[in-house]
Length: 298
Image (tube, rainbow, N blue to C red; front, top):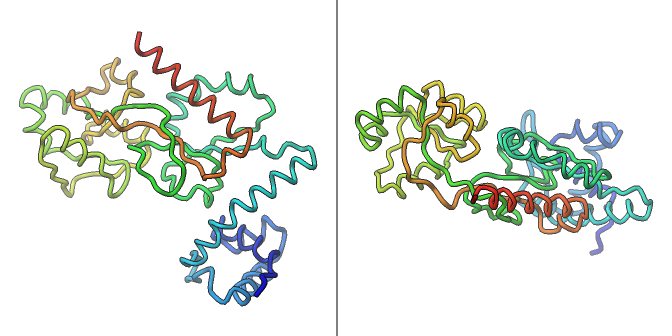
């Protein structure tokens, strides 16, 4: 049977992006009741529910998630074509999600070269820590930290930044006196997120037994995590972007063992680079990262 409710499908796309009928109504300039009607009409024609209605929120069903992932590339392509036909350069607006840590320590000092070279690109940097569903967060491309093992989008290495254990002055003194292997089991390990494998990977590389404790802390914001280490709250895995703190004696590297496969990666939907502005920004990022690697080798 031929599908007919394409107007409702567009409403579904906006609701799925916000996971809110109220926010979708505001964006589309419709009443909340009109939004509910369109979704009910869509579900009736589809023959299955696209949302689970909870007490104060909604969530996509498994089928709704599949439908939304299929609809996203189609809507993006259509919007690009309309923008080109109108001659308004819709592709020149891009949103990049990244941590304020990476933005301030690596991207910001370089960004003016891109802005000067591509003045027609409206770039929006969206502070984000847990970059899980890019489309739901309205992000065209993300810069993620880790070892690149994400299966939800296209992944491209940007900047290798091996991760190594760091500590504040007080903990560094204990390590210097007794050795890291003796002190580490007594210390809280600071993690970037729940179920992170980074510390487990490091212990394996160091030939040490990994023993998580109830004192371990999850601090998603990297800047807050750096300060927590300086304040003596535990040890954390950091990278060369904390070179100022290391040089100033506020942070100390407490082991030569590093996770060489960790670093920063570009993450984007499969069709994202069809956007000329996003492709230009991605190419510029890769060039800057390569230049940084060459400069650090001298």
